Each structure stands twice: as C-alpha cells, then as structure tokens.
Length: 206
Image (cartoon, rainbow, N blue to C red; front, side, top):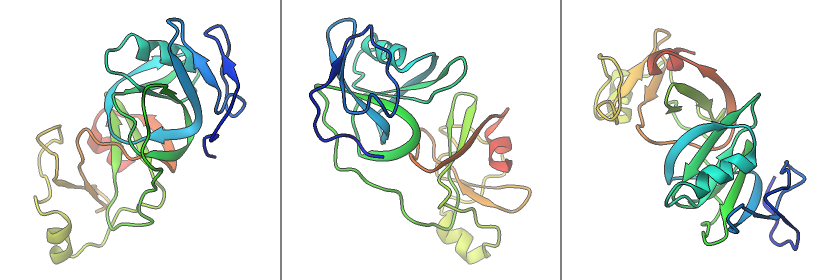
C-alpha cells in the first residue's frame, strides 16, 4: 500500500487516526504543526529513539516534544505499540505493519526496496526488543570457509555480542546459520514476527 499523492482532507489533534482510513490526510498536532499520515510506510535512516505509545496521535505528540524529530512510525499494539522517532525522512519503503506520519517541513526521498535475496541474514534490535525482518533475506547454513571469509571480512565473533563493538562481524547460531551484525541499523519491510529476547544471540537463534 502506498501513500496518497494528494489529498485535501485534514484532521485536528482531537481526531482518532486509523489505517488505512486516515492515509494521506494532514493531521494537525496540538501545537499546530501539520503531519501527513502515511499508512503502511516506513522511512530508512534517521533513527532517534523508541517508546511505547497507545495511539499514532501520542506517537506524533512524542515527536513534537523531541527536538529534531520529523518522522514517526508506530506499530499498533495492545495496550501500546512501539513508536519510532526519526530525525530525517530517508527512502520511503512499504511496511505493512507500520502507521507513519511525516512532518510538513520534511521531504522524503524516492521509495526503494530491499534486495530480492542475499546470502546471509539480518536482524534489527531496539533496546530489549528484537524483530526478525525480511522474509526474502535468508541465513546461510552451509557456507564454506572461503565464502565465510568473503561474506564476513571481520571474522565470526566468538564473544558475547554487543554494540558497537560487534558491528561488522558475523555470528554463527547453534544451527550453523550465519548472520552479519549491523549495529544501529534497521531494515524496513517484510516483517515476519516480534518477540522479547534476553540477548541478541537468543534472537538470532529464534
């Protein structure tokens, strides 16, 4: 689902936003700033912080109280869902689970998509919440020593994973699946599931 290219509809801070019904409307926050609602759309880069909010409106309010915030992405949850604040509107990408809003002063770059396939897996983490993402990216369970060297130029980590020290290394799970560690990096779209895990290693094993 994409974002409407144009719309004349608007909603005040008293309105209740929902997707897909509110897609493309201009939402006026309590302080008068306008946001364009973007249903099922995320933006790459610019990550600032994450908090749990009960509605998209409260996620926008959190953005308004955070200096430099121009984009929000909220995932519905019960009673609250994760609200991601961003300092820049990177490439817009399809994300079926996200309700977003773009501040009127921000501009978004051309929509992009993730590569159709790659030889190793990726995982994103925020605080203690880990999210398996992108069903088209698969973990390699039969990499040869030579391919592991080219895929993991910084080697396979044998210590407890942590950021930023583990950035750029690889981790091999008990099932021999190989994952590249990307600190402070997220990959949007094709989300599979979400679970709460005690460590990045346990998330990768999931």
